[in-house]
Amino acid sequence: YDTAPPVVKSTFPAVAGKYNAASLTALAGTAADNASGNSGVTSVEILLKNNFTGDYWTGVGSTFDGTPGDDWVSMPLAQAGAGKQWSKGWPTLGDNKTYVLWVRATDATVNVSTYPAYPKDNQRLIDNQYADGTAALDFFYDNLPPTSKMTSPANNSYINNVGPLATIAGTAWSDSANGAGAAVDQVKLNLWCSGCAAGPNQGWWDGIWNDT
Image (cartoon, rainbow, N blue to C red):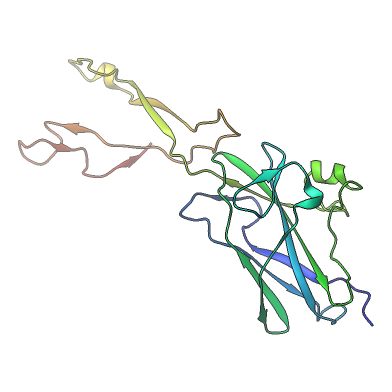
């Protein structure tokens, strides 16, 4: 006899994580029933939402659509001690997008962990919450490099004393035309000149890229 739902969690991605293609490892997590009802976990499913478009991954290729009730995707399970591990590869994700992830698990007596049921809990889905009001997991994906531009000194300008060159300045930004845009985290600069290297040779300023 078992009336308690299993406990399920995501181990990747992390809450509020920020990823590019190189750092995006497989969807993964754990599920266990031994701390609750102990009838055993029989399935784990995820619901993945593109928060920019409001569409949900169907589990088929990289297709997203607008029907969350049909888009819970089954995860392959592997035994891990008294519980289960689950893992699955990602669909193709769009750059500069926030994604939202829900996870639910079912045990052998058909108890299901909390989840937003569609259409009853549609507002919870819109608000990126579980049925009990707790927040779903969100993360940010961006595989596009930012853009940087020098504003001072001007390109191809001539400077005959150090005064006009008191400041090296510019701008840097991330493409936000198709999403929120990832924040620029760091800008570095270097300077090629005829008198910066040791001796009379041309070279790079300090030989390294410098924080700005």
